[in-house]
Length: 207
Length: 98
Image 1 (cartoon, chains in turn purple, brown):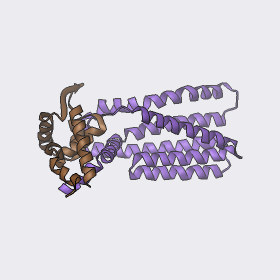
Image 2 (image 1 turned 90 degrees about the horizontal axis):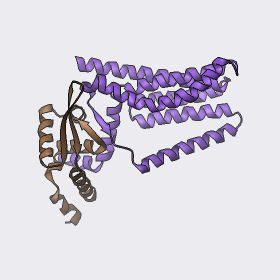
Image 3 (image 1 turned 120 degrees about the vertical axis):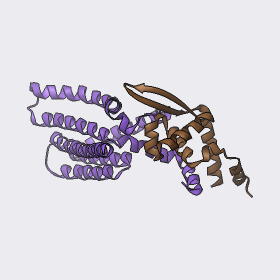
Image 4 (image 1 turned 45 degrees about the horizontal axis):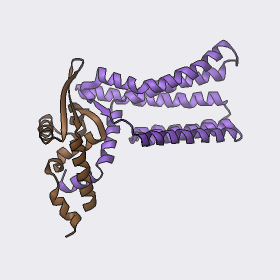
């Protein structure tokens, strides 16, 4: 760094460092691999609920699994990634402990979740509800992936998911099958992307 | 000359050195980070990074803890309260001057 760029760096230090942390979090592809598995599980549960006869034992089992497994997985993904990284990749990617989220950040997260919930409820009142829900879910997932990832691969996969949401909504599939396709596609994209990143990391560091 | 510009002369050189500035900025964004992570994120050589970490530790800007995760030795670094304060002050001076 020259002295001038050091000044600029200092002025934007927090922003740059946060980007760097985001990059470090995604550099081994593990978050994408776990998210890919998560979306494939959610997709298969949606498909089961959409294709099995309502009220049957497998249908009820799928419904219960959705209610129990999905929230559990949401909590388990982050520690699982941390564990895998510490166990197998520590000497390759290094270790960092994120800062604890502050009260204001937690409140902002809760506010966003509330807004999303309200939007979903409003959309479910519009005719036909399934189509709007699919469009919103696709666009929101795509925007979230592209916005949080800050890397070209996330922007590409986010755009694909967003467009897919609209395309699936325009086709005449049921809501459950539509979600199964959307989540399945998201899962496959995440898995492929994560696998490529992880294999490149392993190959690069071992040579 | 503006007062804000004049304050640049008071900048602490421990922080202002570009390599150390990178390390401090990274540590300011996390709770803790290990040597390997800092090595990759900054692109500094291991020897160079080690020297800078020692200087920062001597100045009381960072704390260095040597530990193990299983069989893997970890050199964990984190900013001290003094270091965080110095970095915040440094950023204020730079922002005001720019």
